[in-house]
Length: 375
Image (cartoon, rainbow, N blue to C red):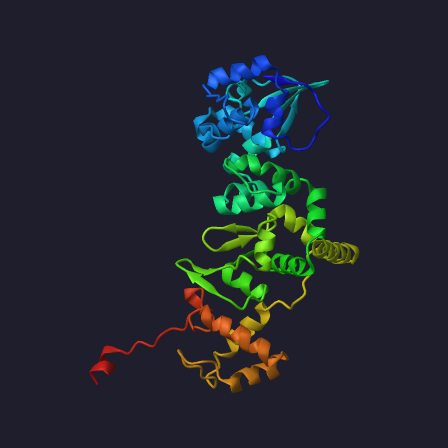
């Protein structure tokens, strides 16, 4: 199924694709999928076909497709819905027949197209970024999806919501347009978005209300409920903060890359500075030692506690007087001596039997003679 070549590189809406198809191919698609066309409706035939295509079971459950075909669909989706190839792969035939993928001629080959509505309906797959914009939009409830669609449409959204979300996807999937959308936010909205990004880009409802300093708390069966008039809701209806059931709110990866760009640049500059310092200095070996080896001190204390004058009872902490004595004797600070002593006792290094690794070195026990025992 082919369509005329255009210079458009942005996400392509499903209705626009169907309207560019030759009439013969559109009728063939309607016949294959047994789509019912109602001439009495005020919407045109391509719009009715688009409503039927977004409900295809292959999109909601790609497991119904053969393995190579499913992987090809995922690869096209990863490229934003446009994949350029030199020739048509054999695995694309089922997708073309079902109206999931469309083919567009190119000078060097062909382009495989997946319209925006299909991308938004397609369930997340293994290996996809779970915080990516597409994956999060796919998990939206009907209420939230309709709110986002209405914001970018400028009018209330009507079912199917996937078709109404296409204008939102054109903005949210384009880095330049998304950056302009963030730049136009109110100061309080920018501040909240930056605060959420600073804590990892994901908060629960209680944390969100604390960050936006919302005094009112509405609680339901799943906990606190965000206000529909707060700053968080203003970000939510723009698709910059995605609510996830039951009470999580996530900033998409694409939004986080723009909001936290300055902080990440500072972090990368600091990493480069540290790396240049380590590589530039004369460290031998390359992995420099910044602390003294604790082994000599540990062995010295293990030998010192064998002195009969030193009494360390099992199950009781090391006396402070002994720690101070060892610190003075070995020329180390008491904190280090106390720490090494605690570790040595924990691993049993102060046990009298530890240092006798050879039987010949162990002290011989005195065996009392039988006559002495009788006496």
